[in-house]
Length: 327
Image (cartoon, rainbow, N blue to C red; front, side, top):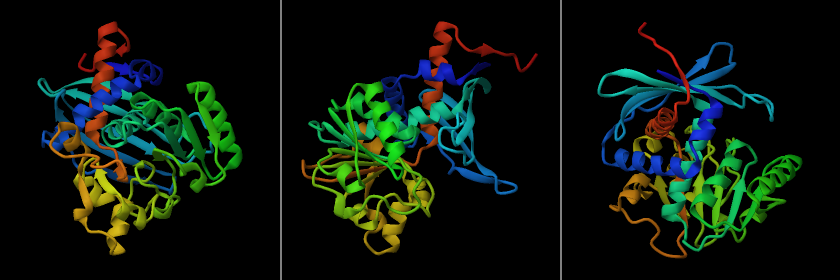
């Protein structure tokens, strides 16, 4: 079994490769070729944090495993971040462990890669302007994902902390050699944008239906529990709404569930899963002026596909730390 650390994950999983791996995982998921129990959350005694438990199995690549992620609130800039965990990857043929892979970096890359896939399938082909709502790790990684699938020329960013927003804009401009400008409000950030990514920890909407313009594509990334929502019911109603995995969306897509509770939409408002679009069995964007939303909750199939790609690449070049569990 290989132990693969954070630095190796960052080295071995470039964004285009992860988008390709996620594409295969989402197609398999929508074809029913994956076992994906709904994630479970276990609170840590003393209200110190919680652990997410995400098991799953896929057939291509033929593997199964589990991701364990602990979420603890830490100050901005803490090197540990808010999520620390690992993916345990098993070979389905022999039923033996292949690798234990650092989970926070893998999750960070695959989450942005899932949005990259959705954007490639749903955004207008002439999209050039990006708006980022948020200024954390996923905000930065989403610029990498968006530039992997569209020739982005300009990025506007907004978050609640103006000083942090300015620092993020400078760091992103230096990193990606793009024009990245801080915005004074969410409305200013998304005005004229072709693609919008919300990557916040907000529990209540930060983006509203009145802010959306014809032709925009929106990736909703930050909230993954039924009680939180980054956009309001009007935004959900105005958009063609796609999800990563329908059973998960029915359980935890807060924006959708709140819009249903408000009587704005029904569950039939969901156009389908992004894997169906990737497989060519469901139409994505139907018109240039259509507003599309992709709701990303994250599923174990994405983790397993990304983890397998890391393990495969590590094995090819002899990287990782080998241990023998059955000695």
